[in-house]
Amino acid sequence: MSKEYLSSLYQTAVDACRPQYCLPEAFKRFSPDQRVCILGAGKAAADMAAQAYAYFKDNAYGAVVTRYGYQTTQPTGDIEVMLAAHPVPDENSQQAARRLLDIASQVPADEQVIFLISGAARRWRAYRQGISPWRKSSPCTGFCYAVALRLSR
Image (cartoon, rainbow, N blue to C red; front, side):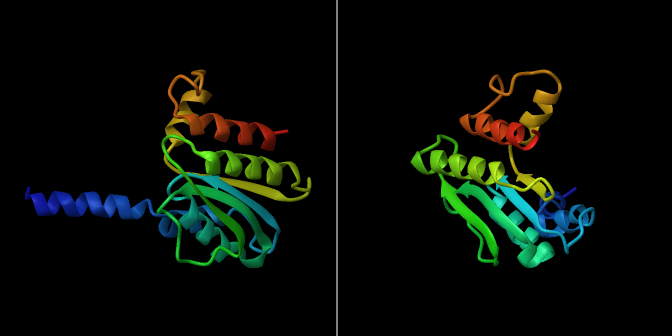
């Protein structure tokens, strides 16, 4: 096998994971006519927010946080895109965490919440397996875990 062929296989796999290809199918579980709060974190968060807005249109609101340089040029409507440092959090990271928790705490009981996360998903799997998220994590995992706890109440 040639290097070019293997590179094309790799690129095809990476492209298949892009939000515009994988999220529309996942969103079909939800009615586009229902109001939904979109929260999220990760380098793909802005692109995922754009896909959520494309599906739910003006029924989507919320906020996501992504790394500096990973904002999107696509519209996100009322889904705010916040920028912060990664992997070491900065003041904007802390403000984004507070903002996401604030939004999550105000979601009416009759509205859906979709938490979009990219990159750190492997840490969620570790937590479900009984491993503390702090053992395998960057500082952001604790913040994501806190949001998940707030949403599960």
